[in-house]
Amino acid sequence: MATDLEAWRAKRRREIEDTLASRLPAAADDPGRLVEAMRYSLLAPGKRLRPILALAAAEASGRGGALDTSVLVAAAAVELVHCYSLIHDDLPAMDDDDFRRGKPSNHKVFGEATAILAGDALLTLAFEWLAEVGVSTGRPEAFGRAALALARGAGMSGMVRGQARDLGEAAPGDLSTLERLHGEKTAALFRAAVEVGAAAAGASSETIAVLGRFGHLFGIAFQHADDLDDGDHARHASEAKGRLRELVEEARAGLAGLPEPGRADILRELAEALLHARR
Amino acid sequence: MATDLEAWRAKRRREIEDTLASRLPAAADDPGRLVEAMRYSLLAPGKRLRPILALAAAEASGRGGALDTSVLVAAAAVELVHCYSLIHDDLPAMDDDDFRRGKPSNHKVFGEATAILAGDALLTLAFEWLAEVGVSTGRPEAFGRAALALARGAGMSGMVRGQARDLGEAAPGDLSTLERLHGEKTAALFRAAVEVGAAAAGASSETIAVLGRFGHLFGIAFQHADDLDDGDHARHASEAKGRLRELVEEARAGLAGLPEPGRADILRELAEALLHARR
Image 1 (cartoon, chains in turn yellow, blue):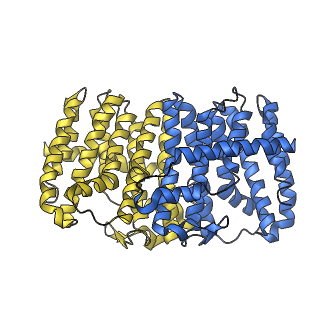
Image 2 (tube, rainbow over the protein chains, first blue to last red):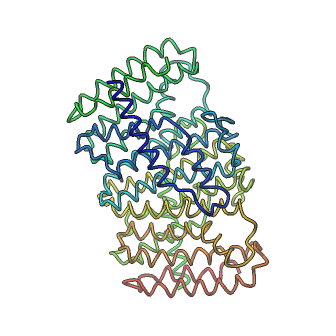
């Protein structure tokens, strides 16, 4: 089963990377190196976990499992948003990180101005892709719902809200405060990823809601696992270990509410894998 | 007629400002002062020219002149994008402007990190509003088209491309190079504003195209007028004066291609007004 999951992930990752690379081609004329900067960060090796969750959610939504190009583009749009957030987070005024995934961060290579613009352009492009696919495939409502989920997860009530909270508040004093922060900074985009995939596949509002709840729990569990691996928020580590297991269990259990729970095996395995990641 | 235009503009500006203020309420709990920063820039006094053009285009599109709330929200979304672009442009890494419209710029008041996030949040919110209105009014295709126009105008082939070109290339050596830059940095968002208004009002693709061409010409004319007022690109000033008049004439003439050209009087007057602005 684990091997199947790995094979599925590898296949989907290739599809996502092909989609990203082919839809954002190198520009012959690229003043200010804008497209080069976008591609530098977007095509750097990565796990592509958010778009992979989007594709798994599309499969799980049970509406014919329409893993066609339009769903791939929707999943890729989520990666654009993730990528923009990393570029802006690394800026000197934000986390001031010189490296990202072992490579110099975007602004170290292209300068701050281009890095800001590359992030802005990636964020905008995500909504361009969703709108374009919705209009061109004659499924504007499904992609309108996807765009709404992505904007809510990424914006002032989701990811950006979490960033602002992190800037403006002291380090979380207890686990529930920490989980509120994780919920905004990390889980809101995971939730959106799952909702985007489901919406793009034509899932009903009820199915999207069940999957969205999974995405939220998955996202918090992911961040606990990531913190445990990196030694972040170490004072909460022993509590977080317990919560990680609980969250994965709750996320998996909630999938029973799907119209065809049997289609959600990949999502279940992706959640289970959080318990074993790098530990 | 000029008085009528002024009254129409004042009324529409109030409607747009009411829409912005009521849809982006102050937050009781606002860590990192994110919402405060968004409101600081968004609700600062302004001409609201882009959303006003969107509303004029909606009237001109001749599809019942549906200037209902959904069209107002679409027009307001264009102002969100304009506002985000000003905040990011003023950053130290970009134009490094300490003042905007006579007030300290966003990052001078809230710090660079919050200013970056406020811009990101405003950009995201524009697409959230368009998707929300499209889904909630059962007109996802019209608002999908609006989102597509806005993303294309704002992003890597429009406004952001112009910013990157400005960073990466020497000052334009001739008027046509200058107009290419104006076309991207300024006119792409004007064009989008007009297209967004028309799309939200349910205009046909043909009508949107006619109006989009108007928006493009209007935007370049606007930038020439602005340069002439500010003494920017002074070496091109005498040529630009002639071009301003030509562009306004061409923009007005193109409106004859609308299904009901008589509905475009406000657009004609807005273009005409560029010839007299502050000169």
